[in-house]
Image (cartoon, rainbow, N blue to C red; front, side, top):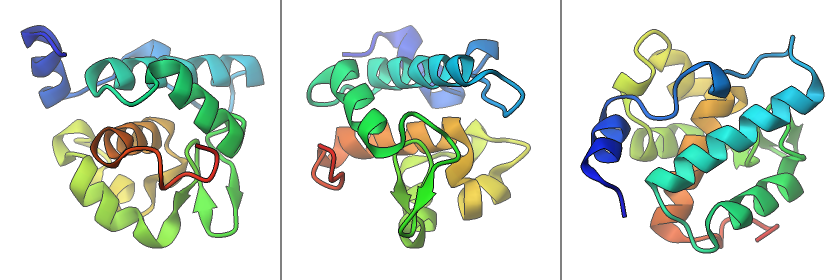
Length: 135
């Protein structure tokens, strides 16, 4: 259950800050640490069945927690199906969470770790883990 501060943060711009910023210049270990930070933040805001440990387990199985993972029409940390990305972005993400990059995030942001994790955790919160083969 979110407290009022968490609700306000989630509504304005969830899981931002340096410890969540993922880019290719980081070491592999630091990338995965920051992805785990994103998952922890997101699952604290939108609880999922099995909590943070389940989310990490599913996303590790799907991609090895690698934001640039790609295969069989799926991409990103949670291996989102690319053909569904725009509809899911419209449903589970908010444009004001990505004020400078919304058009990119909405149309092809699957490799953006924060977008992929927020979308996927919110989706798991809403519909459960059934969309993921690793669940």
